[in-house]
Picture 1 (tube, rainbow, N blue to C red):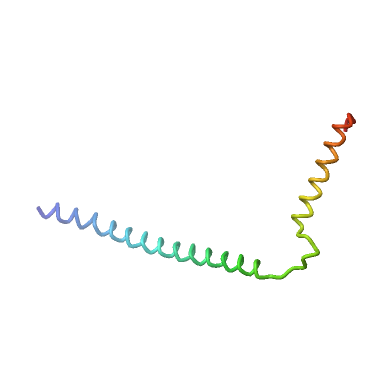
Picture 2: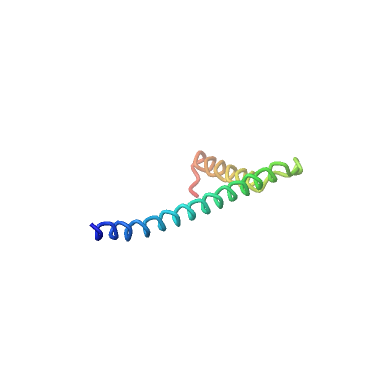
Length: 84
């Protein structure tokens, strides 16, 4: 009977230590994740609060406009029968 008890204790102690270590690591990871999410929220809030000149379009808008102009030029060329 003593062998069964010592076997149980031998297996239970490392399992408990592993469970505590996993819990600590999970809590640290969760804290890091929450802090990272808060950082991203702060970055987004700072980006929306910044004032920019309405006369100057964003770089993304300029790229989209240039892309649309290029597509329009190609469609006009196709309609005119010109091979690009």
